Image 1 (tube, rainbow, N blue to C red):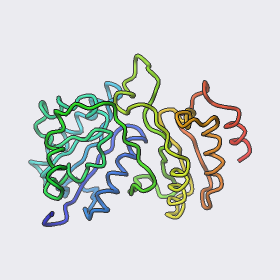
Image 2 (image 1 turned 90 degrees about the horizontal axis):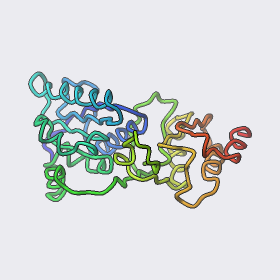
Image 3 (image 1 turned 45 degrees about the vertical axis):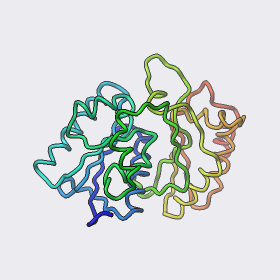
Length: 264
């Protein structure tokens, strides 16, 4: 067990989907008694949740990792954890070429955040996973959070992002999202509505629905009008005044969804 309450700082780069992952990791840490801090000088551990989508994003991620690593010499930092999409693309390179990095977590491993920030606080098996995961062979990411996952919101208190699906099934030649995020997989509508109710109870008034392609929601579950039905259900959640949808594409935007948007 940890001897004192460690202070954990976060830098979340990239898109809102990545921000939700950061919020889930922060929720896990807070649930287990760790103190979250925005003061990088005071942090015992820094977590950099990276983006690896385009060249400028990769450069920003590397520069941020190196900037945080300097805190080991100039501040209180003892451990540096790198998470997110850059890990999925360059897992081995990060640990071999950046010795400043103490642990890495891919997009499907964020539930291992406790082991990554504090190996002494977890089982030997989890600690060994984090120590060796740079060399493990794995398939595409499969993780999908649900309403039971604690979150610490990093948005203004009146709105929150809600990830309705993860991954992508499109095979665009210019894009590595399927490699970094896995195949498209929708959350169950009941899970999303339950999360919306929890957020409303916290004072959230606006939900911003996100995924890699929100108009594809529910197709993998065999639903014909999954997004339309989901919007109808969310419009009934007491306390929620607005529901916005991001990452929509006209090729799969149904008439049913348009009717719900017009009616609600």
